[in-house]
Image 1 (cartoon, rainbow, N blue to C red):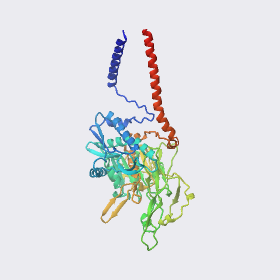
Image 2: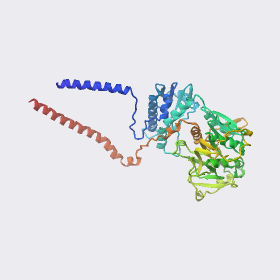
Image 3: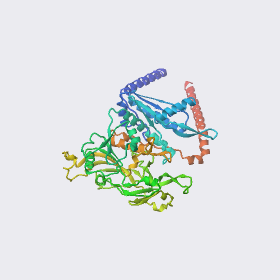
Image 4: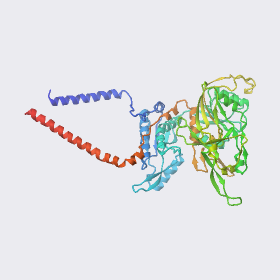
Length: 570
């Protein structure tokens, strides 16, 4: 067989091998992620969600056009994630990227208004030009997802002041899959889980929880429920919320929620352990720190938590407007730090609070874990104070004049006090070994002393869930949860509470998607600046030198090969 025939045979063998490999691969499905942090690996929950789609999903991403490199990378990551999801969606996922800055000024304003109406807020960035100048520009690192005739906006980037710009972008990378899948999963619900806001003990009124309820009502059925001592009244609810009760719970209602928990019910407790009357402070008066008689301490203690009758003063805090003008002069309000409004650190190592911004609290107390170390209850802190904290006890006097007091930092010698935590496991009833015939309005019921697995959230500040309300003669208007009208800044309260509700109600493991870590691979900027000339020299000279060496080597080898052929023919 001559050389020509050998070449033809080799080509035919290669074609047959490729054909056979294609047949084998077409009958099987697999994907290999060779990255060290598995950044292209889709979570099993995501795969299942995509496979179970019964209608088309449309995603419009409004992150396109001219923008800094970091956001171009974010755009690319969003595109890669959606492309991966498409593989499992069986052609039922369609998407497009839209540049909201395209068109003339009138067209852009119309697009902006439409996006803001959908709940998408712009993020302002600075773009540097070639001459060293900078211009401000709005971008929308968000998307609108449409499924089953419903739509929901998704925000991929939320700026957290406690993180560096690089960490903020990296966190956005990590949350892309969660933001997409959680929204699609919520839109795909055929039945809405029920959530109960407990009433009857002077809890927060509807206006004070309206912003959160409006948000949750898109995906849950929200009801306000009075217990009235009826065991089993909460059985149809996936979770119950106790929002800042200010009057005492009676034993009948305590038994109702206790048995709800014993039967696997999940509860979020937002409890004020002390009362501070802000109305008195606003009127220039002083007020006492008094313990709140909610009568829930014994129940919470049995579940593994103790809320202390103290009041946190934290150097990391929000601000209040204070009139600093002399008496009789024109009012001159100035923002001053108010130590009793701590800004709380979320636990960034936990999937519930990962990436959540600082959470604003008001007149918070400290929370302790109690009970045997051998208990099967898993206890995880979620919100903590800063490392410069001072505690006031009950009967202490508070007035706005304290703002003028000189702060002695040595007095703030306590640190990282727990304000909120989650508890999960088999809780023990607070009514175990008690006579029960007088409860449940005299009706018999099946008492459970050792509970099924349940989840519980406890916060030692009821204001975490409360939105501010503007009450005027013209009407009542709630402000967004977490929004500080004095600082014109929105804290992480809403995202935090939404994640808590998802944790309490989700059985699919959706929050596990947030556990995916993507490693930061950042340049050492200081090293780059110090070695700038060397790096430029290497990148300029090395590539052409390699090409020249390769060319010379190839020429020499070819000449030798031709010389041998000529010699052999001779």
